Image 1 (cartoon, helix red, strand yellow):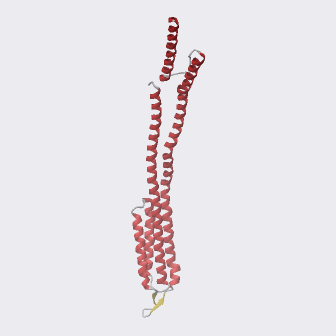
Image 2 (spheres, rainbow, N blue to C red):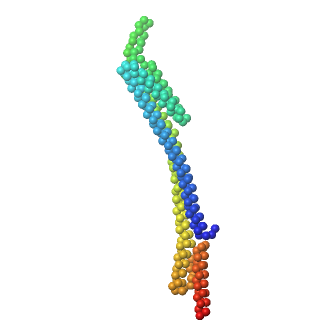
Image 3 (cartoon, rainbow, N blue to C red):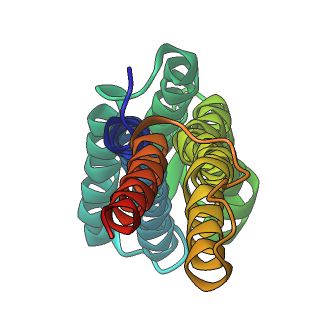
Length: 269
């Protein structure tokens, strides 16, 4: 392919094409990065919300059991059952979207919730003690002691299991977070590569434009000025190609024609 115009056009169009391709690739990778980031943040936010709801419902149940066991408020059992229903609802809600590796932790949470329900249903403020076949005595249960020795360990097991569930759930997000880091590098890499290639191309363009464009024109101009000022032979010393070489040849032809016409005029005189 000849012609400095075509060469220059192809060079700059190559830069535009390179930048366009790298831009499309970067936009695609950034789109994936945005999707993965949103998924991870949503999962993390969902886990924290579930943990907060579970711990709040467990605390409500514990507070209601204090009213039942220590303050003998049997009506507070309704609040206990309401808190247990909320616990089971939260567990069932998160179970649908939980990965298989977390299902076992949720099953344990359900068992501990069932244990809390059983303790709630079985607690009585008084108990019957059979002395003999004819004598039955009613004793008041020490609610404070029952709460500390029976209920509180079950409550602590439940809350600790909630923490283990959060730890396990966040562990499931770790590989996705690592993949997110790789995607970030993948989204930036095309831009960096394109930048390096563009710098190399621009330097090459500068070299070729200077060698085959600027330098020949400067030599043509200097040689033409020396001819006009000092009548020195027109011989520009530079490597020329395409239109610039044609320009130099045309100038040389014009000079030769001018010399020939001048000589013919002198001979005619």
